[in-house]
Amino acid sequence: MADVISETESISPGDVAPRTAAAYLDPHYWDERFAAEEHYEWFKDYSHFQHLLRPFLNPSHSVLEIGCGNSRLCEELRKDSVADITCIDISPVAVERMQNRLRDMGLEGIEVVQADMLDMPFGGESFDVVIEKGTMDVLFVDSGDPWKPRPATVDKVMKMLQGVHKVLKPEGTFISISFGQPHFRRPLFEGHGFTWSVDWKTFGDGFHYFFYTLKKGRRMLDKECGSERPSIIPSISLLHEELEDENYIFRTTICEELET
Image (cartoon, rainbow, N blue to C red; front, side, top):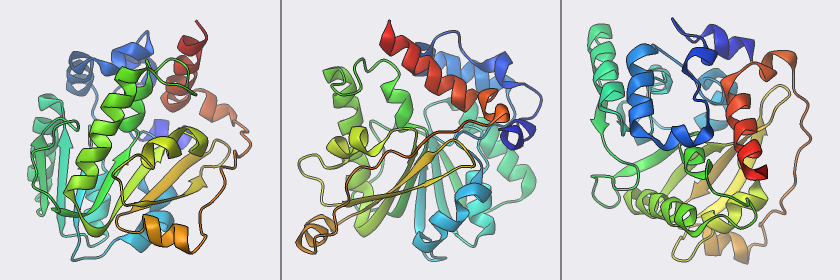
């Protein structure tokens, strides 16, 4: 994806990509990467899915971004009139650098907090919208068989989803932007205790990314209305530029580890 690569400043994806996908689970890897890398957008930048996200945004909404890294999504949301944004990342390096950047820009209304997505420091029903873009996918890099992920992986994913469900306000929306196809993600999203409905769209020029929308409090209502969707796998046609991007490297590295 040439457009994404051009938005990565100072360092090329090949300089920061780990040798194995397992490194994505190591907090030290991210600290070292964020110390060297100015900006990188996983799974496309805001302009590519803005049309999908905007219907769920309102200037009065409080928005939580999970795993902000060095993305500029929060800045784009602020420009789109979202006035109350909280970003979290497990890396203190990423948090400090983003805090400094936002301060230098004089951009207000964005709070950046160091926090683990598996143990978020927020009370119940705190946010209207929660967004994650590729962050949950990191938990799957050592999941084993995608049809039957390792119990440790499932435990982590469910802990994250339980935390998201907790901090969402009634009728709030969780947005998950992912490589994960619906037949892999739905069993997790529809786990016991979750009241959200599950829907999705795709975006991307040749390679499809999944844009999941989970609306709290809507699960039973959607079932009663018969609006559940079957899982349909879109075809994949990779452009030359997409083959060179770390998003693709990330996905294929995971696939290679699953085969070994």
